Length: 434
Ligand code: FDA
Ligand code: NAD
Image (tube, rainbow, N blue to C red; front, side, top):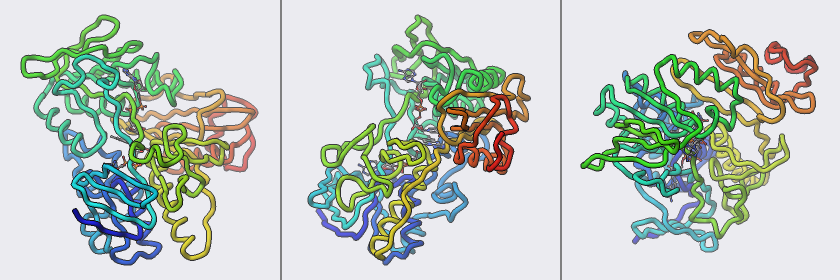
């Protein structure tokens, strides 16, 4: 049992960890000051690749190709990068106990790590249907997706079941992105979700109708308004049938479950203030304990723009919150300060040749333009959400880089609108009033 001490420790080796490490290096880091402890076997990578290019039938993405920070155009930080910078990358190592009072972390093998400052970046874990007691939900062939090992197992299952039946349970990000790659792999795909339309936490029915229509044209079956109530397996324990609550039964060789994620807060939940499922932090990502920061999926932070506390499970925030925490730590050391985090929510998804972006808040009335009859090959349509006469959120399918920038500006500046049917709004200079 070894005991080691570091000036800084990042707990978790995902997206936020990779961007935090880069920021430490940019701000000035001595060899031996920083350790990253991760239960994953790989150095931090751009997690979004796992539900997209990692599963492509041709030339799938593989590590080391997508280590952070390539996702935002930065350097590819391979394990060698970390060793060259004097950062200890402690992989395949799960922290099982933590003490904020003693500033220590204990790993599964009993090693103890002491820190001066800690950044918690433990992300989230998928929710399983067995968590709700759904019978048969632990059968072989039922997959979840969070880490590279999950994606590798799924990739192998796809290859082992050419032209087989796949069922995607859940109509959110995982359901939509996975249904697309399974279809690209020539599997017969059925999606099942309880809501009346897909991606209900962001879309309105007109937006969803476009994607559902597109998926149906690709040959994907969509079953709405019901849930998976059980699974039947063969004599080898391999899933063969998905039973639905409405009585239907779907044949399945592979099942993907994407029914949401739960932030990994267990190690500290009785030691730090928790709100909205995450560690409550201030605009500098400081938790309720001194020298302990929380970033990415586990942080519930003040969203200054809307004057409320929020937790965000998307990659842009994971990157930016990590940078903010490191800049705060380094500024305090230098006796200076940084500006409070002032985040504009940004989400995106890609599937087939489709690609959408959303900025801001989906509150108020949604005004959708161009979705009906949108050209499915070069689809371009959008929506904006209007509250108190101002644009609060803006969505665009098929936008160019400049158009997406305009979208962000409209949502950031909350441009006033007089009419609700003006798609041009999103393409006007930011100071314009329509
Ligand atoms: P992240 O999950 O990246 O990292 C957490 C790390 O902590 C992991 O390495 C984990 O193993 C480790 N860990 C946890 N507990 C530990 C312990 N006790 N001991 C040691 N290590 C521990 N977002 C988006 O905006 N666009 C997109 O296209 C996608 N696509 C996408 C695809 C898939 C498949 C997933 C699962 C998620 C996305 N996301 C996304 C969401 C995005 O990836 C997510 O918000 C960020 O990865 C969050 O970054 P974090 O660093 O907070 O957690
Ligand atoms: P999600 O919250 O996006 O979607 C969950 C969906 O599960 C719901 O929309 C609903 O349709 C369905 N559902 C809920 N309970 C169900 C039940 N009992 N039976 C059947 N369906 C049920 O979560 P997700 O798609 O699982 O994504 C997991 C995490 O990964 C999230 O944090 C998400 O933000 C992240 N992710 C993000 C992206 C992206 O930003 N492009 C891509 C992939 C994953």
